[in-house]
Image 1 (cartoon, rainbow, N blue to C red):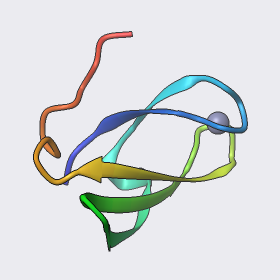
Image 2: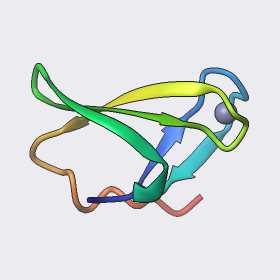
Image 3: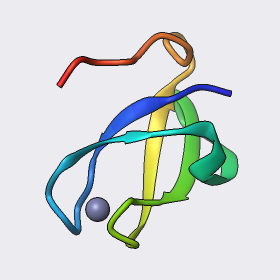
Image 4: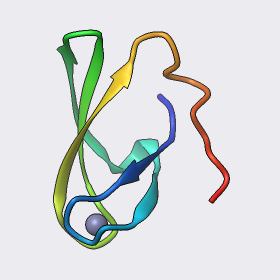
Length: 60
Ligand SMILES: [Zn+2]
């Protein structure tokens, strides 16, 4: 799997999401939709592009 950053809609922060936090992966248009729980406890979903799944780590 992969880690990535996500702008949480609940705590309004950019969080680093680790593979261990991901609860589900489904296919979506143009990529993969992952569901996970933010550090703040809010359920979130994010769509990852199929092209760039493995290298989206961004320095904060
Ligand atoms: Zn959050």
